[in-house]
Image (cartoon, rainbow, N blue to C red; front, side, top):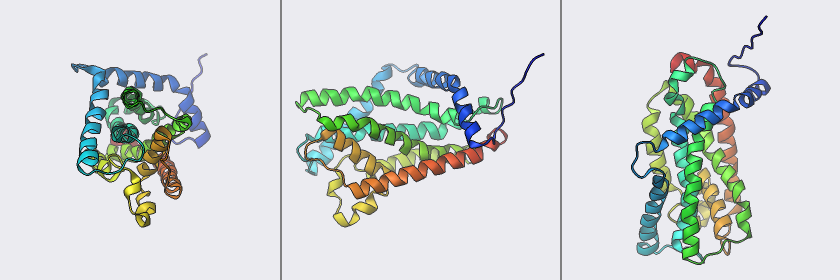
Length: 273
């Protein structure tokens, strides 16, 4: 006599998270599949993960450091820029991958049930691999400028987790909305491009006038980037803590709202997608 296990969408939160753990092998499989196809049929392969942030760093250093002569404190300008590019590239890539992940796996979603959060979660794995590869550039810059990291570097993993949360929150909103409204596939690149210019990637957030810094920190990437720079640059670089806490609050609320909205919407994914 055979036994059957029935799994369906809309289960309570505890059962849902248990389901996510049960489907961890599917998570590994999807993540590995996405990593393998990421640079398939490209000529230089993984080198793209190095070229894009490197070229962006050079352009920002020339424009903001050489031409605009914006301050970088005690740190070389290229290192200050790259300390911000690391989280920004990870955030931007993750947001795009997560936002398009449900539509990209439409065939699987319409055939079987599994916790849909597996898909956007695994989509972030590819961006995380790029993020780790990009660290090689930072290491080379530090060696080239004889710039030694301080003890604050030990705090960097906490800020990496913060980037995960900052990208996954809005990514889940976009992924759920993208199932029904495909306009979002065109909105994501625009938002990423706009976010690059309004976030303190090419310059330090300290140049923002004091009366606007708290408002500026409503952009969650302001707190994330400040945290990375504080950890990597050390020395005289200080975090504007009221702004950082505000960014942390925005990240937390966006992530909680994203999970709630995704869970609420996923029941209809198979019918709509």
